[in-house]
Image 1 (cartoon, rainbow, N blue to C red):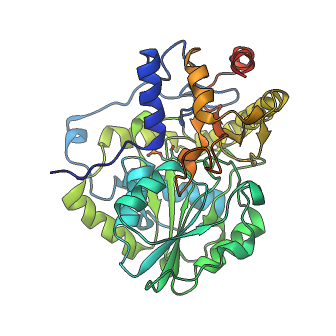
Image 2: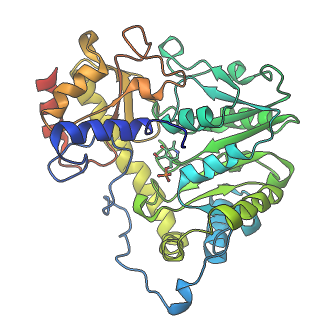
Length: 393
Ligand SMILES: Cc1ncc(COP(=O)(O)O)c(C=O)c1O
């Protein structure tokens, strides 16, 4: 009865790891370098994470379809104060994490729209575009251009019989960490604000950016006049993946569509989770969290860069995210490397799972590429991480 499809690539790796080790990657004693979650503990210089959320009987009612007004307002205030975004709560819809917001946006695009997407991108985009059977134009992002498409690469014409183009882009990019910022971001959003163009900027790693967090909303003058969608989530920056709270910022007319979808397909998002996340947006707290996350993970990025390069990795990582992205030494494939790592209860994400064409086998361009996550690693695991990598190479 059901269409068949495999699990999303990161989970595929987690399931393989569980088969090999009888443990879940992230359990105590494991080395979760394939995982896409950040530390869920207080980081150096960061604010504490609240230990509880108080509930009254009224909090147990159905939540609002577009999200609770307190949270939507807190999100709008946040973007207005840090990026002069000029948005209101009416431009915000809350989802159960970033992915459901992305999927909803893609699912409701009109049929004459094709997708422009970088060749090396966030794993589940591939699954979503496959299942939705969208026509795709690939923007080159490979070792040849060091995973950094040029400005002109984003000038994309509609594919086949499509008439409009919609860009889907993680920024900073997962897995490469390449962040498009400043004037380059302004130019890019300018292109996709034009008629016949729209874009989804997935800013899950907004806080993880050196020298400071960045949002495309700084460059959008009047979101209601655009088809720009900005996705954020409490998952990474606010360090609470388990809360399952994400949001999409867009023109009011688009938020209305999300509300209508929620009314028949989602029923809103857990109110306790929304109340918890609202606390995290308290202005002073969130300002402290931005600085601390950017600072701490920048230092981790530098430290792991030195370690991985000293083991012969050829890194292509940019200034953002909490991953290193690069080529393994000595021609070893990422799958083979994982087999060795599993024996030490460690594992990386094979690069092929970030290939939007999923070219597998020995000829695939990313066969010896890996994504190494330092997001869940505390400051004290570095030595043992490097020791395992040394042994497995
Ligand atoms: C690029 C990117 N976008 C969005 C997300 C959102 O994740 P979630 O659905 O867990 O909030 C992630 C998490 O891995 C991500 O890496």
